[in-house]
Length: 188
Image (tube, rainbow, N blue to C red; front, top):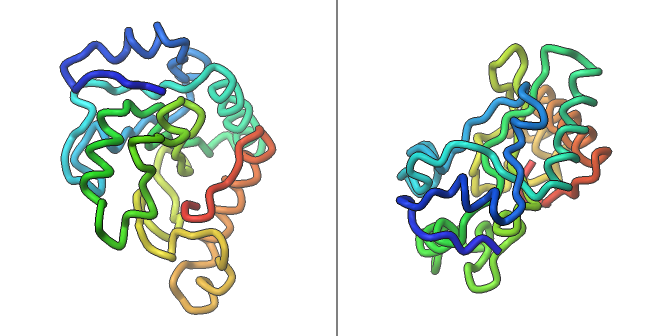
């Protein structure tokens, strides 16, 4: 588990020391938009400081490269956007403290046990076409049933997400699962 200190620490060196891989060293065609390195996230603040690279456990990083390659075989204009990858425990605590006791609590892993992001084996991704994010039905970090994958046909039928958003979600899931990733029912 990544128990890195707060944002002043050299997280890049620490990630590498722990055997994590900067995914862009394996494939440079990813789009990196680490939302927790900005204020564009559910907490509303930059929790990563100057940390700006997407690190993963080496096996997860290789699998993500396979997914990107499969996607680009379908169409070179597509790319995977990485919104979050390995996440330090200090950030997990901040996220938990934000949702603790609210209806959003089920969307964030408790910091006492951590989650797959804290081990570098989970990655939050989306799709882009010609560098522009495509419709996924919700934004990243949507704590609503519209982001869930369990009843997507119903979401389309009820006009909550578009048919195109469903097609985009299915494409992303197909390349990711074929590369060895598992889905999470609350996130497209």
